[in-house]
Image (cartoon, rainbow, N blue to C red; front, side, top):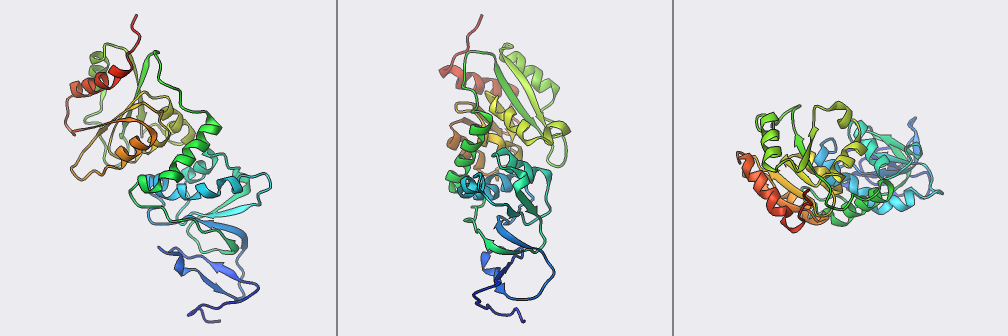
Length: 292
């Protein structure tokens, strides 16, 4: 049967999924084939599904409106069409919100066939605001499963520094031992400093561990980049200092900060460590530390 046009049928209708920017590429046709036919497919693929920020903020949140149904005890097994080569962190995101991965089949970029299709609303590119409700609903689901981020208190504060010391766009020429020591001394030793390093393979292989690191931080410091996507789960009232490397860095992390209630401060690429100290002390004036 030629596939040049659309054919409307009442029975034995299969959806053929091809990676395409718009759902209009879905064609209903009858043809003999040897491929598996999935009962229910949720296609969430769109551009850059293998890029961490785009997956985190634009693509994965598309599943949010269907989570209650997909996670119900009576839910049938579903197939999620990722649309690109599947990485371990793709699957970990579903586990993060509490989905039973044994009830979900993940398919990469290959074409698939389905009896029933659930088409989520497309995610908006480079704008957390335009994906607002889906992102905040995922935050709520994760907090229900893992527990909400702890509130700020008079205990010793924790600074989490995101360090890109593996792969492209490294920033270890700025975030290195001398910077950490001067930051610690500048704050009079009142804060503990933890590193969120891209070279830490144990941490990078555990999405839940990464989320917990951001949840527990009172101050987050990092260069503009996908590592800051975990701000979705940072505690309300925490401080973010985003190191901007170029004048073209977008405002996506300022948007995320506003959405989850962070105190956001952009800072220049070559700003001295004293500027970081001043920002932290200024931001914490409204929530003074208990000093012995």
